[in-house]
Image 1 (cartoon, rainbow, N blue to C red):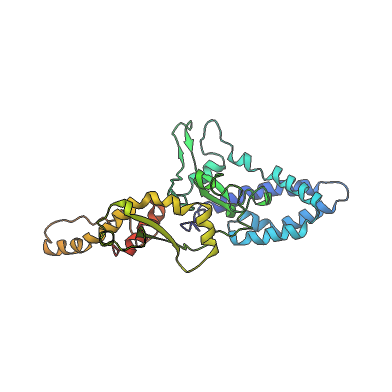
Image 2 (image 1 turned 45 degrees about the vertical axis):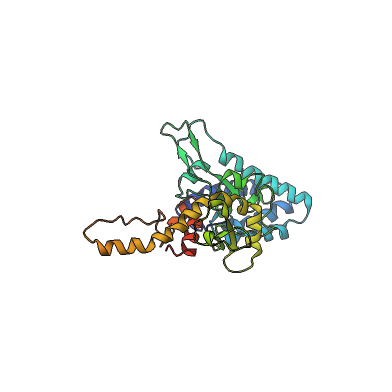
Length: 316
């Protein structure tokens, strides 16, 4: 994870909560209408009564408690399989993401959810765009992948929980990257929870000190991107960098990083010229192409990289 997106679902959490609550009510109705003794049904009804709010609402911090409670409530393999089957039926993720022939955004589904957010760049890698598009006639459309931070196969009761949804790019969520990696077993940075803890640096390659490289006058092949944990050694950072292959993927961004670093040469000129020639109207646009005083970088491809390099070389 490169950027924190804690507020990504802020505008739609209430609507999704209502959507999910209806589905859980249908499951509860089925359970209450069951005739005959069944401790499994009773346990599930109690489980839903206690944890329904956490499952429906958008707080990701509540979900580990739900997972622990499920494991404590259902200990028999037969019961676990049966209950998971019920959740798979009533909280069917495949139905939620099923694409209509004509996407009109009238029903609440994955397209409507993704279209409601302003996030445009994958939080895991921050290299790939993840915007949502629906043509006016609804015949052409695309949206980001939705990753389940806690896998829906293991925890089907969280299959539709918005607090478990991470909009991301297909590559990060695919078999080459996250794939079947279980973040509940191997801790990774959580885009909805954790602070941004990966910092980028542009450094010369090799051990020998090259004056031209230090002066930013060498060819781009003389540099590489370094990723470091902002707050010291962190296993979550190491796991995230490894899983999403961030070090290798960011090496193609060296030219962009070098271009930002070279802006440091223009810093004094940008400040002095308006003072020397106040009668001229100088462009006030930020040299990075976005405002570094807010979260604008989050919706810019490689925005975090550009911000870090600008700080490293004193551009801002």
